[in-house]
Amino acid sequence: EIVLTQSPGTLSLSPGERATLSCRASQDLRSTFLAWYQQKPGQAPVLLIYGVSNRATGLPDRFSGSGSGTDFTLTISRLEPEDFAVYYCQQYGSSPHTFGQGTKLEIK
Amino acid sequence: QISLQESGPALVKPTQTLTLTCTFSGFSLNSTAVGVGWVRQPPGKALEWLAVIYWNDDKRYIPSLRSSLTIAKDTSKNQVVLTMTDMDPVDTATYYCAHTMRFLTALDVWGRGTTVTVSS
Image (cartoon, rainbow over all chains, first blue to last red; front, side, top):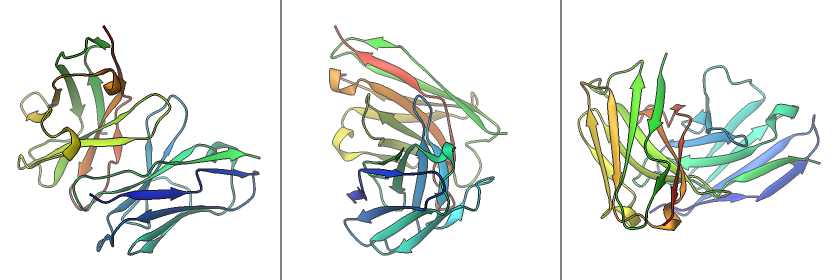
């Protein structure tokens, strides 16, 4: 089973700043099957990025994904108030399709 | 437009069997690569992937729950059913189903989730 470790656990930033969220896999994913989701309180997760760097339909281009092997990053170039939420990474190339434990992005 | 909706009991007793139904529209589970997955989230905790079923009836499960989980599809009703036996209070969670396409995308459209409490 591939374990995904996200860091930091909590990230405190201000609107307008740049956010960098990390997701590290316990083994080389050997594929591009890495996704990022955003979840707001009381809501279902929403897919942001799939295939490491492909934006979901309608996603603003301030969101970008990158990485390979075991290290992956979600970058939000300029934070908007609606971006403060919990973010999860997931690998879906190897069963079970594990999630990371999440990064909470909070307003500083 | 793809949509999914979970349904099932809000409360189950310990040791009982939970049956959750995901009813979907806007796609067919007969179409190549299409799948439906289940994910749960205990209160205040992270997402946990449970299982997925694909158009060709290929099924995958989380190993830690493999003996208690069953996923099945009914393409004529546009439904996917998840069954979990021997429920325990630690299984209290919101359960989500979501659409996917194997090796093409991740869980790209989610239902709103259904909350299940396990308590006597």
